[in-house]
Length: 120
Image (cartoon, rainbow, N blue to C red):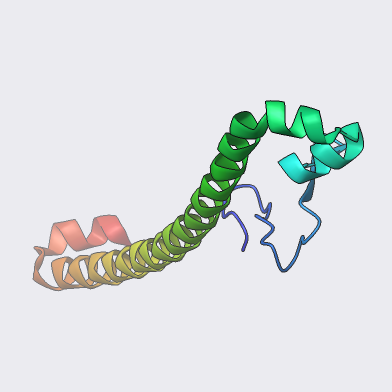
């Protein structure tokens, strides 16, 4: 899905399954709590000691994924609506141009003779 003003895109999970993204030329990886636990190689005792915090992090990860999905969907729908609005505005502008030309043509036909000379 592309942004109308910037031409940029919002990657979805299918397009970007790794969760990696680039911003200002820097590539970052989004790590989950399980990724961090694996990297830290926590002992069973440490896992138990931090169990509540880990569960809270997992809950928040789930919420963030849902919020991200909802945000992407809302952005997609908003982009569609903006594109429709843009097409409608373009149609209205073209119709206004046609009406303006017709009004000018009618005015030339009904204007007194001296006024017509001013247009030619």
